Length: 223
Image 1: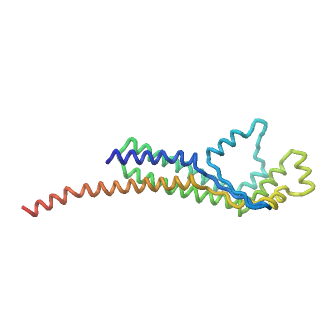
Image 2: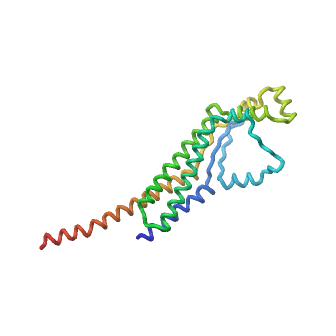
Image 3: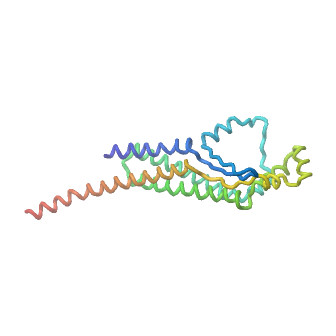
């Protein structure tokens, strides 16, 4: 039974890696004059798109204007990163604990901590995206900041004639949602499964430890 518990717990922890990498992770919806465009991507697909994009001749610099626009995102983004790191650390902790030890109490602590960390990722990421979709950091402000610091003559001419490019884009396109989807939810359920699996075996161990005492008491009564 101990081997069965450890094998299942370790395999469940390992499943978090493909769940995060291959399942759909980010969902977005954009409102356009012709309707709503919605799509979702896995981290694997995002990584491939970044690889296909040529960054060779492009240099990005964080200007003071753009930094000021993005300032409200700093705290929730840092919080999201911290929770992601904790979530991955808890996954590794469960895996290592399952493979090399028999400590179910530690595994229960790590899996419950993984549940809390995953929920923390969802909440903090939602807070970050709400600042973009509903709060002070809109796409129009980001685009305006990028356009104002751009050295492109074309962009400067467009800004001169139509004003803020971001305002013009925002009148045509509007980001409705940007949220985490299947990958994070699957991770949450895996941690919940590990916690329940561990708790079940801890209850079985408690029952087995009580059984000899009960047998001794019944023997004494017969005598």
